[in-house]
Amino acid sequence: MKTATIPSLRVDPELRAAAESVLKEGETLSAFVENSLRAQIHYRKTQAEFIARGLRAREEAKRTGVYYSSEDVLAHLEAKIAAAKAKLDK
Image (cartoon, rainbow, N blue to C red; front, side, top):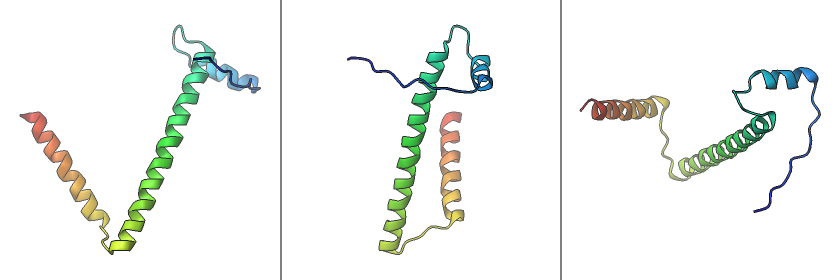
């Protein structure tokens, strides 16, 4: 597969210095920018999927008339956590 380039980016010297100050040993600024870009893409896709699931759930609730209170949801999640902890303790 051929590689492509990302357009060069002009930033304030302070931003470049801040980025360079957090580089890990042996990490290049280019690698840092690439990893940041990948992380932001993943974040935005995940966020869009989350919103889509929420909208589908809202439509399903409207269609069926079945709604759950926050207390019901939290109780269900707490039960799942308790079950997972019990499984780990075995």
